[in-house]
Each structure stands twice: as structure tokens, then as C-alpha cells.
Length: 498
Image 1 (spheres, helix red, strand yellow):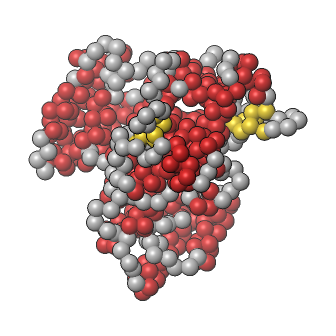
Image 2 (cartoon, helix red, strand yellow):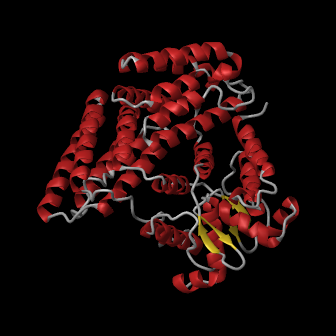
Image 3 (cartoon, helix red, strand yellow):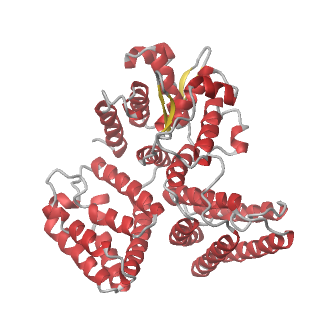
């Protein structure tokens, strides 16, 4: 019987095949297609960390490509930390155990581009982090207790720095201790992005810094005490209050209209041997593009200009450009008037990179469901409030989406999902929209792995009726009933996700 990994691998291979001829798209390039095929093969084999997929010559013969194409493909596979080329006797393309870095950076690039605000970030954190804290309390072990106490000790040992109110080391640890890899990855992204606003804060006095550090550490101590004692409800309440304080602190000190700043590859990461020069150069170029206001269509410079500006070799630059092209940050145009052209990032790279990492982490349908429920209920509450405030788009867009399962095109893959994606979009928070898009895609892959038809194909009339009932409550301004109906609807979908 085919597993979910088999179906996900087949989906990746299919998308690689469909990319043929799309030379204007990063995914359409032959190297990107081969990278997708290599990653699909790793998943089919059960992600055997430490095993060799073959020598360079073996891989060239297997995929029927030139040395240059294979080497570019390997760069992308290495960037995802799926496998790494090892030279010499006994070498080859060795399967790796990835960390969250590539998935996190991929999402950061997209959210940064679309102008995510600190309000958006904190709202998403307030939806997800209390859940992670509750799960961490339920699942806490003796090792977990040691980890929490070590985190507090490390925090006390750190010097007070401006921005400490945003840089809370405890939060990613709680995400990890939740035992839910989806929550862990999302919280990691959100805390990294929140920390970037420290770079846009006005000058802060030493007294303010010390006061903020003291307040944050005291809050962390009380949260940890509640988690260790098993009082999940108190821990969640304290965590929520702390996030409200973080939001107020950032709002008070940030520069108005400031965009997120900072590097995609952090300095400490760039210093590690495994962070290849191409990744560091890609980070430098990305930062330059962001600093210039992300002027889509503008030319950052010719290849010669970039070689001189960054003082690197042609090989390193071309590898860096491949990474930028993969994330739709920029593309190289040859010929007169060409150069590195700034492009518009799109979320597919985030979805694919996230899916790869969560596949390795063994994320289950229950892990996905817990996160989806939180995001969907949060979106319903926001949309209800926006409609009450006079947002005229809500009624029209949701009415169309509610009836899409029965009135939309028969072959539209969004038939059952459009209502949910429109709710997320109307909530006005790009973080919720992207996170829900990723969850929906991963759910679709899980359903395919179980040979399940999506609800929209089997029960269109019932789905339309339920969506309309949720919409009725939204338009009536009754957030409680809207959330109740959404929760019941999501519960009814559980059989399709297992």
C-alpha cells in the first residue's frame, strides 16, 4: 500500500515533470526539476539519513543530465538540507538530517516581502503559543524540566540588550516541548520575525532596557513555574499576558512604518562551516534588495558589477543566484540590458520547503489539525470584527466562496477550501493566510496518502450549507456562534485527514 510519503514524493515528481519548458520560472529550470526528483527519491526511501544516493557519475547517469545541471541541482538539495555531496572514497550524495533553517528562511523571505507587520506577527503568536504551552505542560518530562531551567539560566547570563522585550528565548523552547512539529516550526518563524523589529526600534535608554529585561525574565519564570507544576491553564494565561506586554513594548518603541530588517542567514549561522559561501552571498543580495524597497523589475547589477561589489568568484555568485531564483527573489537575465532582476516572491517555495521538513519530522494529521483549528478560529473572529466595523468585502467574497463547492468549476482543486482561504485573506493578516495555505496543502497530501477524496468532492451540498451557516453568524456579528459552527465543521472533517 502506498504511504503518505509515497504520494508526496509522487506529487513532487509530477510537479517536476510539469515544469518542463517553463524557462521563465525558477521551478522550470532543469536543475530545479532534478532537485525535486532527488528529494522525492529520498522520501520514497524513507529518508535514510547517512546513506549515499550514489556518486556524481551514478546520479548523472540515473537522471540523464550534464555535470553542470547535476551540480546546480545538488546545491538546491543541500540548501534544503535533504542531502550533501561528500567527495573522496566512500563519498557521494549523502542523505542528511535537516533542521528548521531552510523552511524558516523560506517563509521569512515571503512574509518580509509582503510587508508583514508586528501586529500581524503578535496576533498569530497569541493564537498558537498558548496551545504550545498547554501541550508542553501535558507532555513535560524530566529532560524537559532541565531544558526549561537551563533556558532561564542562559537568559539571566545574557547582557541586557535593546530589544530584549522582543527576543524571548523561552518561546521556541516551549514550541519544541509541545511535541508538535508544526507548532514548533511556526513559532520559530514568528519569534525570528518579531526579533527583527528590534532593528527598527528607536534609541532606548539603559534604564528602559534593564526594566524590560527584568519584566521579561520575571514573566518567563512564572510561566516556567506553571508549566513545571502542571498548571496548564495558568501557564497559558501567563503566556498570553506576556505576549500582550511584548506587543505593547514593541509598539511603544518601534519606528513608524518600519519594515522588518535583518539578515535571512544570521551571522552566527554564516560562520558555521556548513553554511556555504553561496548561501551567505544570497543573504547579502537579499538584504540589499530589501533595503532598496524591493523594486520588482529593477536591475541590481550585471554579473560583473555583482562580482566586484561582493568580492566573490563567479562560481559562488552563480550558486547564490540559483538560490535567489528558487525563492523568486531575483533572476539573472542574460544579454544587453540584462543583469540580476528583482522579482516578486511567491509562497510555493515556502510550501515546498515546509513540507519537506515536516515530512522528515513525521508531522501527523493530528499535528496539522491542532494548528489549523487555532488559525481558522482566529480568522473567523477577525473577519466577524472587520465586518462589524464596515468592511464591505466580507459579505460578497464569502457568499461566493460559501457556494463554490456546488457552483465552482468541477475540476477546481479549491472547491472545499476556497471559503477557508477567503476567511484567512479577509482577516487581513498575511501570516494567517500563508500558514493556512501551508496547512491546507499538507492536509491535501495526507488525504492523498490515505486515498481519501476531499470533502468538496463527496459532500458538496452539505459543505455549502455549513459554510453558509458560518457566514450567517459572521454577518450577524455573532463571533461566538461563528466560531462554534466553524469548530463543529472542522471536527466533521477529521475523518478525511486520517
